[in-house]
Image 1 (cartoon, rainbow, N blue to C red):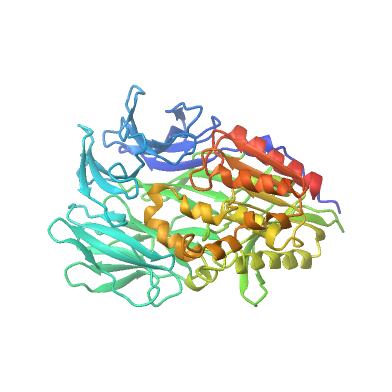
Image 2 (cartoon, rainbow, N blue to C red):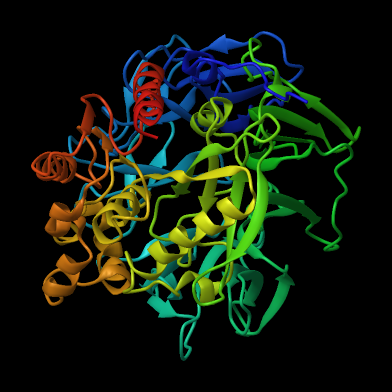
Length: 601
């Protein structure tokens, strides 16, 4: 029986619509969201019934991602950077379409926090005072004048602000596995709330409506993160929600009728909603299958908007009516030229690594004829500490549609599988995590449907580093490498992290290595210093404006590998940063990757 399905072009996959940034208007009549249907992310509004889609911003270059409507429902707030440089500003667009930069400092990075309950202000963070740290400000929405609320001089992260504005909850990592929470008041300054011994995470997420309790995430005495709350007067704490997997975050609806949280369930993101007063879970009638994100509850608390994607379809926008118990889908983002049954469902799998540790992964197997064996790719996520999930990936589906199996490995050091698994690769990167990826080849071969002589490795950012590490440190393991803006020289990258990552600097040093005191070790895990061993074909893609992995990282490794007489292809996008957001660039880059694989794998 032949099971070959229709083949689609990269243009057809990229011409699926991608959505983000969902919020509901104050009158419940419109949903604001971001979409790349124009070729770059712009802001759109759609009526709650799904009609009358209106494009509100019209950028051809830089993405404009919505934050939400102002309380009057006529103006809205959005965020944008320049060419992917990650120096984000906050903009207000007025009724007549005029755009005003509210954080105009040339090097000022700003990020929205939340609207105030009095509807006269919003809270945001900015590094305009000190490029290294984000201070907390309150902006008056009538005068557009900011007021400094908290001067951050010690590398804190602002996590929550009480409705009475008396308390500011802060979070500060010690390492990737250990963190503390604090509370700030004008009267008493910063107070430590989480005295503890050993590696424990504490991260505030919200205050209750009356500013009596602080809700926070912790993995105290547990392998996974869960929700607790602390009584600010007594100092007593109690559990609120605990799952068998990590709870990623928790939020209240605008008037605290509902508490909702995300669960990372073995590579699938779920959402649970509770009645705040009773603690009872709310049953969402007809809740669609798939990954949930971007959830937003309206000010009236009658409606909930959210995005749902699955491995064979990009995210669609849904609205749920709590009173009527009715669910509506407002979009259809899969390119109508693509038949979903031609695509491949992602499958969560697990396999043993070299030491018996179980490694989770997401597996995509192409439609094959009887007896046919496919070439395959080990896909490595970003990070370190990232995770591959069962999201829709146009690039992965494109490759699978053209006959490549893909195993997206969640090697040790990945998030989502407990704190022990997360820290298992600390100061061992390019070693044990790489070994986990190589062991993934055995899983592929054991399916009986993969050609063991045609297996390559691919990844972006940290995954790009892993691609280079595989080719340099284990040159016989893979037949080709696809490096998408990956680190080649950790010494340089760790010394040149963006100023606004200052609070994360020591955390990265403790996870990867200190480039000042552990130079020999850092160079031992940096592929650039071992590039003479790379003897397999390599393709490299890079954004010229990338502030995290500088273009020189790719320039250098390409130059070195070319000296080996190895086929090397190199594409630089002048208008992209750490990730390719423009459709024309995605089409060019992903097509080049497939043509490279067709030629060498």
